[in-house]
Length: 419
Image 1: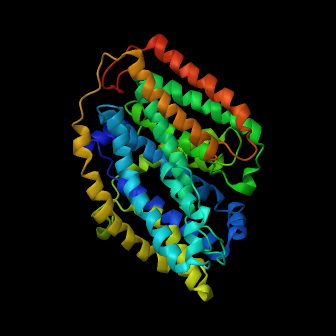
Image 2: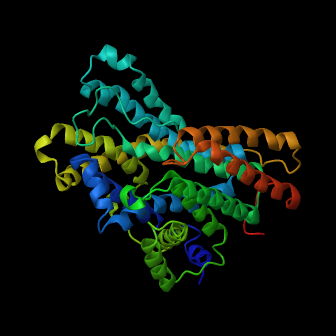
Image 3: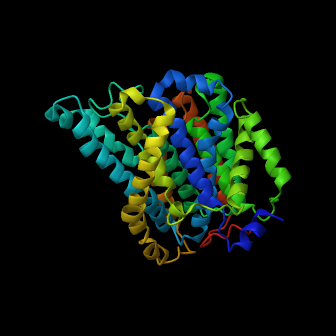
């Protein structure tokens, strides 16, 4: 049996996807209980310990699962505007509310500086840059005495790579690439990541492996698993091998990409397995809210309960509070926003007769935004020289565009099941 056949048994919706997202988001909350309770030194010690591999796998699996699911949305979208609109409806409303609450309520109540200085400080204004992928974690005078000082919401660091993922897919849609073209693009992206690795010289045993570029390539692997799901086996022995290889090489240079591919298969496999979700969580998709709101809630706990800064107290208090906030976010923010999806699906199907200018304009605009994120988001960090990476990115982009011009004809809505 293949992954596609397993999905078809459930009308295309994986029976375990909701559970997989929920497990990942709660696992990240539990992991963050360490740094919010004890600080960065304790976090680094655990990175070097027994739990290093599974912890390193959490965010890549989150992005791989997102890549698998978003590719389905990509396939259903009538045009580029509809696809980007769907992505904006999913992430922007809850993110906007979190940023507003943190800046105007949490910051106002907890800052140690005068309010006039707080609202005029450049840090206050930079905090809103997270809406566009230009992430800033700090607000003036907030959480300065916490074990993890100053950072209001560390979870925002994934906003930039998430937006890069959507830019990546948007560029592919602008080029009207089919399955073969998307596969070539993923290989090109892998080459860019390998070039960055060759420059960085990072000891992953000390820093962990969750660099932004690993999230982007995990997303691309999720795309590929969706596109080739009719040929990928759905077998428990392959799943077992995927876990072993994924955890074994998660901190090994070069082989880490084999690890990320295996972990992408593992999380998609889990999503295809029937897994029940407890009743309180089965009424909505609370995973995004749990991930987004957990860190400021945990930081607030550490701020007020200084005598109980233990990871288990942190989890016991913050998990139910975060789930409640996530439920409110789902029912009053996220779900109402997603109700606008129907209007996006009704947008006219993209024309099959595009001029060069009609294709080039959205491509260039997206590429410019992607370059801006590339430079400012830390997508290639830790010793990687951006100037030397830009030629790699430019050459690889030309390769993809060249394949598009040489081998693909303009078409309307992509049919990714066809080569």
